[in-house]
Length: 219
Image 1 (cartoon, rainbow, N blue to C red):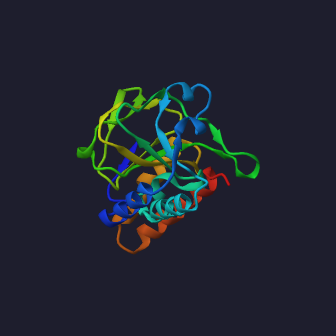
Image 2: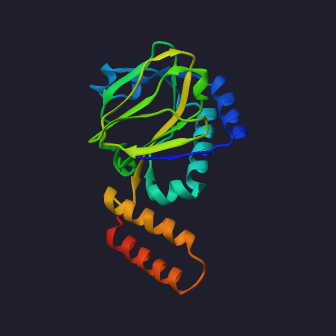
C-alpha cells in the first residue's frame, strides 16, 4: 500500500468538487457485482454524462503525470475513473473487487486499486477506507487531493459515514509489472536512481532497470 499526498492541489480539488456538485448521481449498486451489491450503499456520478467524463479525464491526467504514482504503479491499462459519494448512513461492506474488468479489447486485469480523496477529512465523520492485510486492518482517510494505492485482491471496506459527505475518485490499473514484489523492487531502484547525480552509477542503474522491465514486463 502506498499513500501519495498532493496529487491535486486545492484549486484542482475545488474544480472537481464544483463539477460534481452539478453532476447527476446514480446508485452505486449499478457497477457492483452480485455479492458486492449486497453490501454497497453509496452513489456514483453518472459515467454517461459528458461533464463527468471530462472530470474523470482531468483526474486521470493528474495521476498519470505524478512521478511517484507512475513509478509505483507502472500503468499499462486503466479502468474508467469513477466518482463515489457517501452521505450519512452510506457504507461499503467488506468485499473484493473483480479480478478483471471490461469486455473484449477493453478488458483489463486489476492489479492495483486507487482512491483519490476529494473531501477534507474534517468535513465528514466515518468513511475511512479499511484494507485487510496479513498484519491486520489498515485505516486510510487522507486529505483532499491525496491518494492511496493498494492491491486489488485485498479485502477492503468503507466504514459508515455518520455525518457530512465523503467524495472520492476511484479506479483500477493493470500494471506493466504483474507481480507486486517485482513492482516494489523497481520502485526502490527508481527512488535510488533519483537520488544519484548524473554519471556512470546512474547510467548503470538505468541499464539494470531497463533490463528488469524487459524481463518482467507484460504488454
